[in-house]
Amino acid sequence: MAQATASSKRSLPRRLHPLPLRIMHWINAVAIFIMIGSGWKIYNDDVLFSFLRFPDSIVIGKWAQYGLQWHFFGMWIFVLNGIAYLTYGIVTGRFWQKLFPISVREVLVTVGEALRFRLRHDDLTHYNAVQKVLYLGVMLVGILIVISGLALWKPVQFSELASLFGSFQSIRLVHFFCMAAIVGFIVVHVSLAVLVPQSLVAMVTGGPALKDEAASNGSIVPEMKTPR
Picture (tube, rainbow, N blue to C red):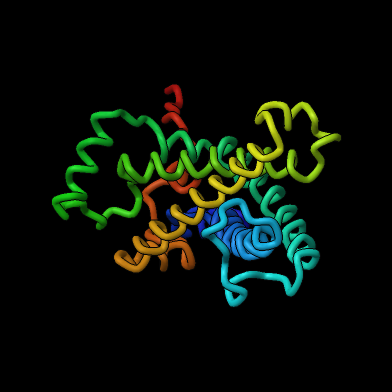
């Protein structure tokens, strides 16, 4: 009976996006939605650029104080989920397998293919160079927006972090442009999901089955030979 159970577990298909990764992806999507909407409400209360204000119809929070409460709520979800995501990607080796290696030549070739509308999307298991750059970049921006957010929230308690940016206004600018970068990434990400619907379906169902268990979680497991 035990052998039959083990055999049935081994026969289950391994998916491109494991369940933990999918859960963290959608939690992150909700957290970012809350943080951006509430952040726009906070921004409107003390604008950085006189020409820019966000319509009340797209912000979260009736007043700035409510926007702050929503922002802190989304922040904790984003931070805790981000720590879990980074830990998962590092421990399983998924980041190393999916995002590396990467070269300048590969990026230039991929950009050229995209400009000529020859970029292929049929293989969801492989990230092209532009995708690798975007994913690595948005993770770095995510870390920077958390650091600048902490410096904005508690500039005295986190004075060492605040000193990295110079003035308080500089911290606000960094935080704002990090937000803008994340919004830009979301626009590209959603646009690609619309152009390649199977990528969105894969993030719900797990995607295509992979050939081996090592590929499913991104880890690299060397082949072991038993002595005769």
